[in-house]
Length: 281
Ligand code: PAF
Image 1 (cartoon, rainbow, N blue to C red):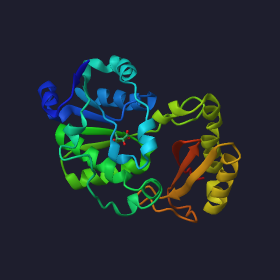
Image 2: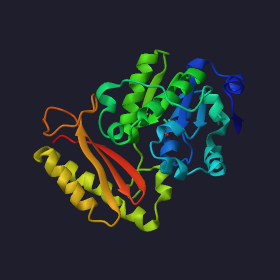
Image 3: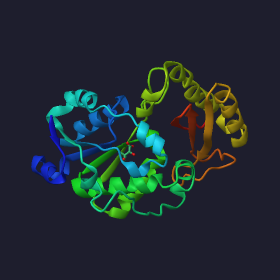
Image 4: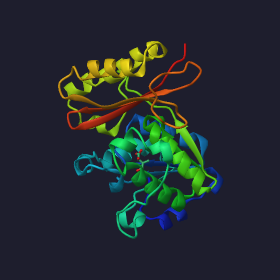
């Protein structure tokens, strides 16, 4: 596996034309969700950079940063099947934050006003700062992000448009475990009992999705909370339904429009997010 730690080393390893260089930014603790992005990136490009960097500025809770799972040996093993095309980039803080670890300030309007943006102050400034640094340094032709972090994806698309580097942002579908639980690095922090109980999140979203356009959003939220908070240590952080383009939560659904449901749930100290596209009847 080619492993580099600086952008300079990385550029020396890039053999392919820049027109066929993919980038998959990650914070490590890789799982099948990441691997689906990496698979798609290696299918579509001659070379692919996978970055592993746990970005401190996007964590608004110190405890969350301190507990964030890391396992580089396991990550490298999981990347082995793709290694012919891969460059693994593991930068140090000074590489990405030469002037000190702090985020830039951005204005993404309504895209960051609600949900993760409201509940995790500064989170998207941190994400945008690091993604901007990675895009600027690596200059891939395509960069791949998962729809599980749908709000992040919309923010990154807006950032990318503003940067105008000619990079294509590729959105990849959310991948679920067989049980329906969305893959997340944070799942490894759950106990077996919490993990099996966490299925309630997707199951309830699916139930609501069958009836969505017949209910008010308040009714759906109440139902979601009643199911999820019936379980010990489970607490709903938010339940929102919004149009994908502006991410402004709505109170009533219009049958002519497309929406997504977004939830965040505390399972003990671990915070899980999930999202599904509403199905129109
Ligand atoms: O989705 C993630 O893993 C992170 O937010 C990202 C995009 C790698 C930026 O640190």
